[in-house]
Length: 103
Image (cartoon, rainbow, N blue to C red; front, side, top):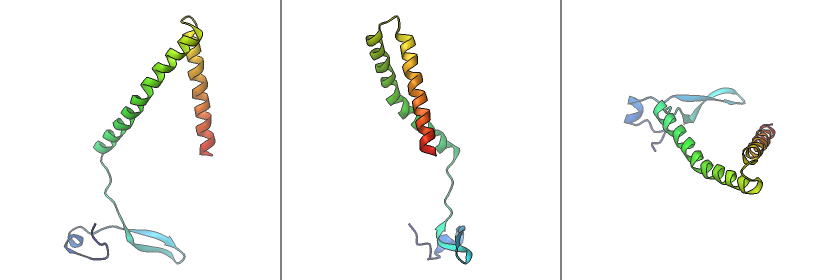
């Protein structure tokens, strides 16, 4: 990583943006903080698809196992209603846990 305080040949070709940081005297220019290059839409699309793929890899076996467990506990006739009840209660519990952790 190049030294920010050393204005080499690269610093003359591509001037670095400096950020203004607040301090007790007002806004001053920070010597150590420089602007970073933003990521593109391609990176965001790949990152999002990787996150979704990873969550689906772990979620699919869990849902199949849950359905089989509910089926073995209550029988084939009552399994769909019971599975809906279990997943609905879990969703409500999870959303309330998210709300309470945000506050």
